[in-house]
Image 1 (tube, helix red, strand yellow):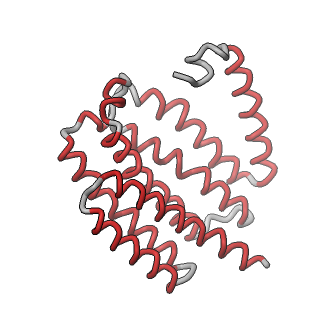
Image 2 (tube, helix red, strand yellow; image 1 turned 180 degrees about the vertical axis):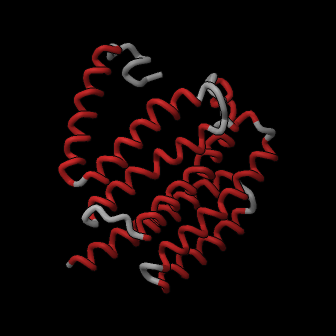
Length: 204
């Protein structure tokens, strides 16, 4: 409710103008880096504005489209940094971030269930809590798998340490969704930190 448009501190006209300016500048900048970078950026924009947002009023499965939107910008960045080439690591990064967003968002549905039910949008918060909890735990598996594969391509030893520690933490959480939510976020940050550090040391 405190965001600019609902709070009436920004008009729709102002929002359209700001959006148009940033969209044009963003696409131009991405195109200057490379055509593939621009394509992935435009795809993320189209999916978010014209598909994901309308779908939220129609079906709970909009979550899976929204997760794709969240996975594309890092893919754009990876392509930009690799001379316009989509490498295996880029695909794994996209898959990792896509699979991360599913249990992440499902956990939010579980933790803030009442708020999401009042939102008026279709989402998985409408599932019976026990069923939603099972879905969250099942959806953790692909994320852990992609994370382990991605990290293993960078540093096998650190991969085993981080993934092993995450598995132990997940087990100890004992289906406590709030704990799983924080562990999941920590696993994501650790994985991305490893990628960033590797890129820095590789370059310098």
